[in-house]
Length: 111
Length: 247
Image 1 (cartoon, rainbow over the protein chains, first blue to last red):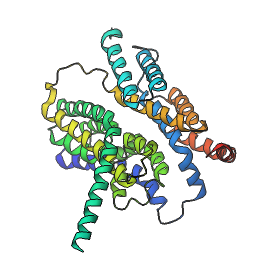
Image 2: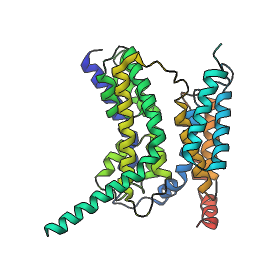
Image 3: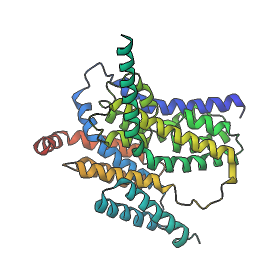
């Protein structure tokens, strides 16, 4: 690819990303009343979108090969337990990440 | 008049400082995650044969992590701009959900709104969508600083990685899990705040089902369509359930 072709490719990726972020705001401008149905979605979607995002994080986990997603499962269980116990975001996040790093670096070694 | 203006300026400055101080702690896990992932991205670009200018410019202008990794492959392949656009729209389609969720929250944030929309990555969305911003903190500036801090962490990481190349030697394997941990905790916190868990369960269940059925590369769009269909079909019962127990 030439430099111009590369710049055009990067430009298309920028355009696509901005489009997905901007589209709802273009379709439903702030100065006009948002349709009732969209207001309802605006209330219900955040939790559903966060659920989608959590699953999205695990999209590359393979259940039938490698570590079978066991380190991920243990670490998520740890995060949930820590969060119910302490209710401190940073403790839950740091705890879960450290457990995961220890698991993939020392316990579940690639064979 | 001069003193009054000065007073107003001080107030505005205080407003920004306050918002910055309130925003920073929420972005701390992202500082760790983005700097690490950004370094990984910069190194990846470096080993693919691109100068540091590429990860720096791309991290600043695209600001969508997973898509930037995909873009490296696009740049290495044959020139096909329409395919690049189509692929980006698919990978980033989940942002449409974020936009609809934030229509109300971004109202009244003035010209900051354009930057908030540009910088609405997964992490900024989840923080801005779920945080209860203190009454005495300006919500527009709070969301602005959350977005700006996340953006700068990502660019810093990509710059370090792009310049240092493969110099980094310590064992960071698994550190990227910090982002997963962040989303799990945000999901949990949101769960604990809610009276009803219908849409949280719907998002989790439908997405998991679609991941099993369609695989990691193709599950997002069917998941979004099914979530929208379910929410539409269940509109009346869900709205009733929401009002009877709601505050």
